[in-house]
Image (cartoon, rainbow, N blue to C red; front, side, top):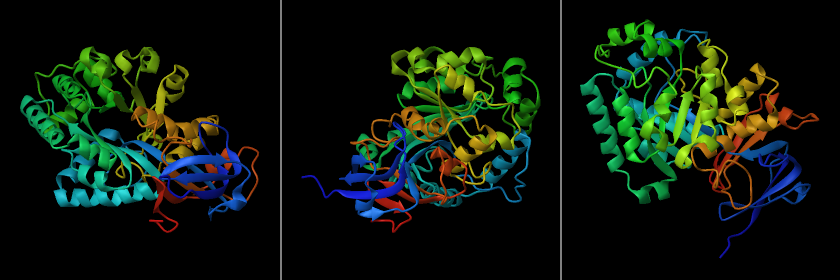
Length: 418
């Protein structure tokens, strides 16, 4: 029997797959959107006032186990020097400390309106906490190692973790497992090939920095020195290819879904191959762009415009608190809007919601506001002013997310649990 229908009213509702609706109602039944009505706010069961209702945000790339680095200056920094500090932090943390960070950061992400997250974690460490939380998730177990023995260890750990996750657990938890070969500069090509045999979604850091390109093409440079200093370099290592994009498109690697984290230095010839229409066997490939992390390391201009113009999918991520000041996708949207005001409001919101849902194969359930989809919502306060384009009320303000709803229940703000 259909449950009681209740309604949320707000100044604006942004369905994403349609124009913004003023003074609108979102009707919810059994955790799903039953109907959206424009011009009917006064009859709402819950009047959200001067606010906007949006689909819950999708964080397509993050590391929940990482914490802010003590003494972090939040000014532009060389990324290799930053990596050294992150590794030192990671090695100095206990498993209990990392799990505590996951719990804190997960709660923060949910409070920031996130209802779908792609987390990259060590040996599946975040799975239990994420699977128990009111959020949809894809948890990528990281795989790393240029040296043969380290690679064997990380592959064993990853597949052992996968074997513990039964299909019924994924249904109950709204979470799915995946694997993440870390990056071409840190992970042998055979590990990428092994990950592709698992039949799960994959993610990797790809074309992330110029030092990566130098290592793949010339076997030298600052990245090699960094790996030698860590004791992680292997003189016998040969890259799978000198082109980073080949790490997701050669041979059997083309059979898997991929989230490409960053993708700053992808080549123009690669862009068209990221289009859904060019992928074999229904493979999905998307680039997860992290605007504030990108700015932090002073990289070259990101090719998100060219990828989008080629028909590729670009979604948004926060990376981690070690490289960005928050885990809020709305913060990333506003940062990107400030750096590139020519991007339209509808496109920015789509990148923050529906494109990420598509990349994670959740677009039939979430990512936009449509009857039949889950009532996964982010509610954002609005300034008390008029705007010809209502997207400007969100993009040109600093009003925060005031509530998050997951499957029709408030899970953060506005009396969570209602």
